[in-house]
Image 1 (cartoon, helix red, strand yellow):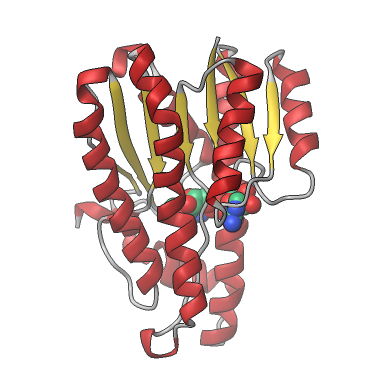
Image 2: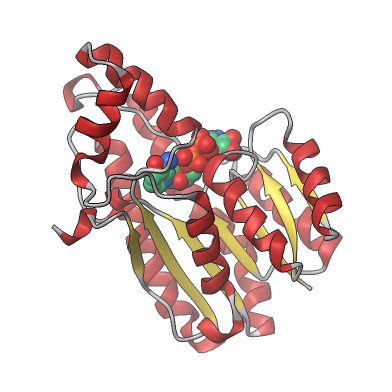
Length: 256
Ligand code: NAD
């Protein structure tokens, strides 16, 4: 059995990724997130798929809690083979009004937490000559949209971090890749739909068709299943030369 640690996996994309790892029955899963029902989610997945799971509510803003999550995971499962840095937040505002504390939180949660966790799992991966780091960036890791300065900066940052650790990990069979999704219908996006409907004074279905999916050639939300299956593929033994990439899964947004 291998072990995968997935941050922000008690909701949305992280949970979808966890389910795809669970389906393979080849991974124990360390769940993480701020949702109060995180422990129940982890227990349910263990029962449904007959695998080992644990839950940690480590806060991405607190490096010491991240290090403890890693050491607790290693104490329970012996090692961490795959790290999926997925936890993230968003805030939409013009730069002149952008709250400074929101900027700091977005950079810390979306970018700096990935550094702390990568650092914490690195030594073991290097010793065992196997490691897979998968960073959930965004289409906004490759292109910008207005009013998302901190988010776009954090996601471009994580793409750069991914490339750097891909180079450092290459001699040790540690790969690092970023997945860059377009819009996925999760609680993070549901909130944006509501906020934008209010800001623009238009119905929510128009926010989806006229604003959100405007840049995607495929006028559908990206599914968590596709993102999860991609992460499982990137984590496989055979994907050892797939490294340093930032893969858009964005319905053709970045093709334009
Ligand atoms: P979500 O809100 O459903 O889930 C986010 C998860 O991160 C939750 O489990 C939450 O508890 C956790 N989290 C947030 N702040 C945290 C903190 N301080 N400490 C610990 N955990 C924390 O959102 P989602 O849409 O599933 O987003 C997951 C990732 O995918 C994010 O990095 C996001 O930027 C990225 N992404 C989302 C979309 C989309 O359209 N939904 C598109 C591209 C990229």
